[in-house]
Amino acid sequence: MRRNSMALAAVAALALAACGNESAPRSAGGGEVITIDGSSTVFPLSEAAAESFSSAATGGARVTVGESGTGGGFRKFCRGETQIQAPRARS
Image (cartoon, rainbow, N blue to C red; front, side):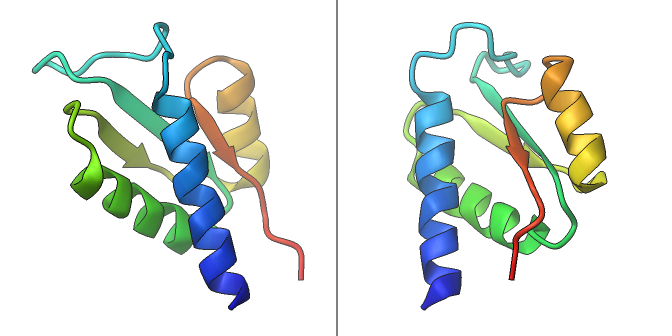
């Protein structure tokens, strides 16, 4: 049950990140690119949420997911290289 809640939260975060973000990069086809990076522990959930969002998105948004670690993802987020930072999940 907890994993489903986390996946749902990740999907909601993707949806919110895609709403009205004019500074998000555009792909070659003109669609928005949403970039997520962070913890390798949370990577499978981020990847599943990205796949779910991409299959449901009608605006041509593309989601990329990286796993450079909690600190690496946060640094990228602070530099404006990503729209979402996926921190390590606490148990």
